[in-house]
Image (cartoon, rainbow, N blue to C red; front, side, top):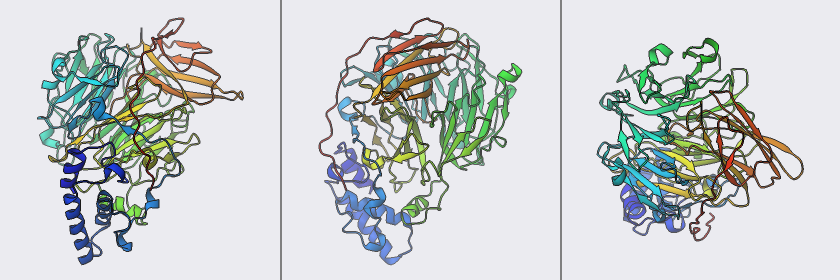
Length: 613
């Protein structure tokens, strides 16, 4: 089947290639690979009827690729079409990566979505994970196209990395990039990460050694936060100590305030030797300092409470047990987000069971075959409750790169979950869940055209075309040598909704306002008032979203009030009747906000046709 994917989805790519359920322009014009795969699968299942549900799953996918689903599949092996239908219809998202010039062909890797040159438009920096792959920098031209600045910037000569994130470590107003390497390689993954300083002229410089960040541990996750509230971003790196490769403690590099760092992980109590596949950071207890969550791929997950406010020292206390945090065991991506808009940061952490049979069993009636993700609702008293069942998220996810945003501008946070694992048979659709505003989520994967069958890695959100909604960039290559694929850029078709986009400029707080909180209060035409809670962050653990607070406001808005809470100064700024459908800049300690220049928007052609099963 991989032969068929290369011949069709890679070499003869369309905007429907490898989108599950496969149909329309996604059906293979060169059928040889899929035909041979189907022949082998049917022979296997006929000779060994109990050969495994994973083979039944792949048989259904292969038949779709040939345009022979569902009619050609024997009844006992058919997964019926209704299993892939969604309860809610949404506009279909169009992959515009090729026409925009950002369809980077790589293996698994990371992505940063950010305005690196301060021209107002978000750019894209992405990578593949192998050392022979490169980092790519795509500059947004503001007209629907991007220019490849990889060579000009100096990034193209640097080796790739499995993940990356961005933040302004030296407070010069420019976002810098941290590239993470060695994840999954265990003892052979003792590779240096790279801190890349943004020089402000379109170039970047590797300052890892000079900044004191040189370490040799396998990793793929980190957080850039101001953990000690001194106005400078610190860096937590979650390293991978596994059963076969021990003694890779997590690191906490505290900024010295001069562009250099000192590792204080042991002193702070975070030098944990765990298989850290993801990390998340937020002030979950609203006490004014940033806490940590670690996703452990070989054990129970960990919640660390920052004791800075209580002790005036940067130390962390393990409160996992008292907070009632545990699984899923063998987890991967994670994040803090306020999914229910109650002003408290909740936790999402996805399972990574790498069990294709268990995934397929779900569609054949065995819905307890694998461990589900966890959605920990913050109870406001230091404890959490796993509400994954009532939220409608009991699905056999095998999630990797993932992130969240507000895809329909209704003020409720949604999520994009990249899926798969290193196996050519792991043709598992990426998933998108839309928040229903009532404590649960709708699966809108099929309706929105998000069900990409390639391996979803780094995922990031930003408004790439300045039309007031968040678009999505995702890395689609796999880990295996032959599993290259084009990255995707999903253009958001949302219309007739309102938004407010907020940039922050710190004074006492770090320059981008990372960690600052926003409360957006919306009044509709009936006089109903609601509040939307956001924080300045790059989002989830695998993919780095634009450092702006994007708040969808819904379709019925007559008034918007705004409150910004700054973590270092403790300043609270409040304004009424803020103009919505605008981009504003809020500076710490300033009396007024600034409505920034309205930049030209651009539109990508919509996808032809709207297919239904």
